[in-house]
Image (cartoon, rainbow, N blue to C red):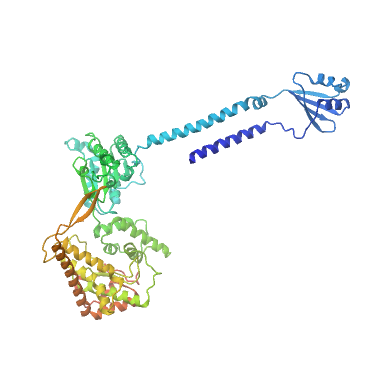
Length: 625
């Protein structure tokens, strides 16, 4: 519609230009009076006429007083003969200057040819615009089945990324270096009868750097890099996705050796047989074409498909078999050493203060992915800019950690004196129980400053990265979760809604101990409940009950038992160390925030030695930051 309106406006503009062109050739006779030939004859006889100009049948009469008149004569008869017929004296006629002007060719075209030619030109121009519009629609229809993959070739040096730009994931990079060798020196493998892998599937949670690693492989191999999202294949029209897949692989073969990167392949790679639409489902047709193209490469086709997903459980088994995605590279969240290396990469270009300790920041960020760490450094720089600082200090980075984890400070969310007191005792209970229990993680910070949806928080972080968790650690976490609830009940003899999330976390953990981890003494090493794959619009995860009602009652009893024992553990600790609980709560009411160094000074006589912070890893005090 917009294109049609624009064409109409263009035609109107051309019409106005042509109309203006006509006005240039229009004779302006507004100052001359139209008179009859008889009046001109009388004026000639009276000697009032100075000269007469004749152009075809048009007469321009100029009188001696300076005025001007116009008239029209017969075409075939001379003016002198006409005047004589009107009784003009020959002597008087000789006193009048008569000039005959030939008509110009432009006036002939304007008056004779253009009135017939212009309508035909306008109609032809209008038809041309319509044809052009139809042709454009046909071109779009023809290109509808073409892939929208973006090409980043080797000439684009500015966006080129290598393995040096990717910190951590050492095992994944070692695995992918073989892919680089395949692309750079394929004959070395062909000569030994080796077959180049068809595809590499990158698996990992969001933010670990799957797309970044794929770009690094292309940068190391220095080959063209096609990248497209899985969602860009599927349209509402049947066959478009398959057509785009064919076009993508056709382009890739023309640019071989190259890499084709398909991000979020689970958008089209979900297990087939959804039961809705059958084999004619557009997504399934697209997946079928991908399967055919990946297994239909020529033996020497030097094209490797790299795909990324964070949901490998929903992928169709045909995608994962050898001959398609031969390699599956798992990218795990970085450990403490990798987090420090990633922080150094993202610290480039940011002026850091001398007191910045990236190792300490890495210790405070267990579970953070590469994207989280990048966001952390960016938030730290933003906080420093808000304070009009020239450098990013440790304080901004530590504050950015809390902002990424919990959200920004809610300075407008002011607690009343009573609510502030309840929050202080609640967080003091969490912190004290976590301090006394040897299997609980050390407390790094306690605060009653609202962040996100939390009125306060107790930050406890492990001293080292863990892949396995023991039952003792889970029991300690249960007791710590109930520390705030127990404190409120013991100090105020009243409960508030502030412990609702703690109770939810504790109940979920206790149920997992019984049903998933087999840590119940009474029920033994068994798991209860199984995941069932429901094939409907892909794979959806649902839990199926595979135990009787009698066993369900025992499970509830065991969950309740874990909660009761954790509550008793927390209550015993809080009663035994009531003095320390009071010190922590009063300091929180006074300062609102307690860092690890100050907190350990308050509970130095009861904290286990193995949980004391090493001097080199202590957070800087507020004075030095």
